[in-house]
Length: 157
Image (cartoon, rainbow, N blue to C red; front, side, top):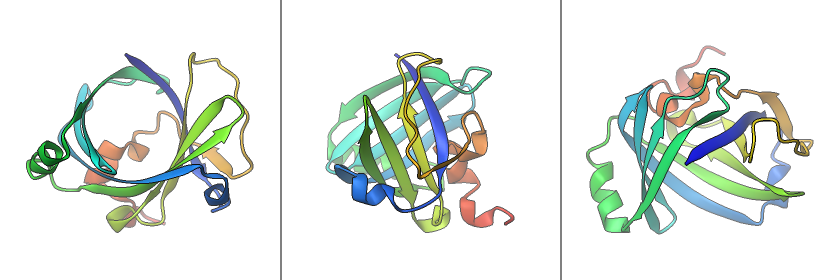
């Protein structure tokens, strides 16, 4: 139940031609406390309730528990979420033995594209596609819970 992932900014739309799947995601947060985040997500036609713990000091790992819930329940829980719902399309791209999840954000976070890759260990090697840019692992402003409160459109360019 420990999630280990690295996050990167994306430098071009080239990833879209490599994607084997894309899914619209709408998510909100019942809690954005840094020690415990509670997220409600509608991913395509499936709902999810997720609890994440505090990130490790290097930002690579944290506790994650997720449970599938019916779409209808997800829609009802989204109405209880804090202001700042996240709207994005997730593209899944297979690179060697890893699947990169690339999120293209819309609404208040339009223009932001972030790639994540989940790992088995913090030191696991992986191939980096040419569209990966700066690593932002551990930079909390790129966490979805923070983007819901401090959207990309309000960042100083």
